[in-house]
Image (cartoon, rainbow over all chains, first blue to last red; front, top):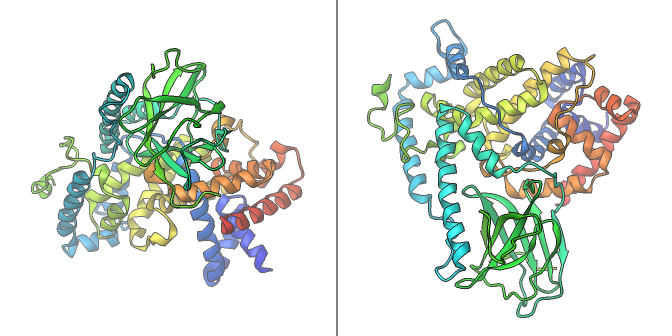
Length: 295
Length: 202
């Protein structure tokens, strides 16, 4: 069998389209074939990114107890490896270090939301602050759910972020505008976040060509609503620059600089009627100079 | 057992105060502790990953009972094999999801070779790529995968995604797309070849 066929077997094995017989034969055959094992790992890793879009489902409440029973009950042989480690006294040290890394992580956390500056548009600022409060709630809710107290809060959190609607396998919007004045040299990029630090959109601004691209990482527009993109220069009023995925996004009057903020609010269809954000600000991100040079 | 945790700022189950955000501890660390036999870390690892893994398995098996059995097997395996996790294989969640998918695929290939094609859930959802789950995904990897999937012929991409997400066999793809199994296999492989060379360039 040719090398290429082995590579393709590995790919089909990972996506799961080999038949049962072929799967078993393939598994047996890679025991002595490190190249093909490497191919398998390549595909597992490449496709692993797709798991992020699979909706979580709460396991039954007694599941962990079932697992512990299988692993740790007197008659069980399944837990041997772990049990041996515990007997050797590793566990206590491990617990202590677990606690340390948790508090370190906590100390480091909570400071990375891009805070809007004082003179920013009052309405937007107020919305952002409300929205920050909501994010905190989201984070706490996720933690409570993570501690096994139920999937409900987690669903609420996903419901808030994961808006139902149109799929977007390619960039949501690929808009061109005349080259904005005052922008030279570098490309700018903002990773726009929702619910804490989870990236949702990547907005790239190329001052040379005036291209603005908004790449979605699973952000959807709810029916009957628009997502309005706002540009908030440091210390200044928010400016609407367009609707995500609907027509022109226009940054020609903008002098982008490091630290400026992009925000996205949920608005009535067609955008805010007042010129300032009227709905909740659901995503924000700081504009930074893209380290990779513009084309 | 709780006395064992008395020295800790955060105790399992009883203590849900804000400072007890085990959700901040990287999964890598929880997995490493699990490998050393730390049952509390294992519990947190379970709490943090079970819903995602259950979602992956349920999506493929479409049967709650079987999915529960698979999930149980998966965590038994995670406990036993935690020491063999290699960060070079991707994030911990990727490693665990691979164990879960393999187990689920083994089950369906053994039990539903003749099964007729289900209505595959919500199409929109199937073809939506990516997600918001920062912990579960490497942004750069997701971006290059999205780009390269976008470069594929639409049919080829649909075969790959239906197989990966829904556990479709070649036969099921053939039925759904009304094409001979041989043709599906040829297109699937052509698509995967193109995908690989794109990913290697990206």
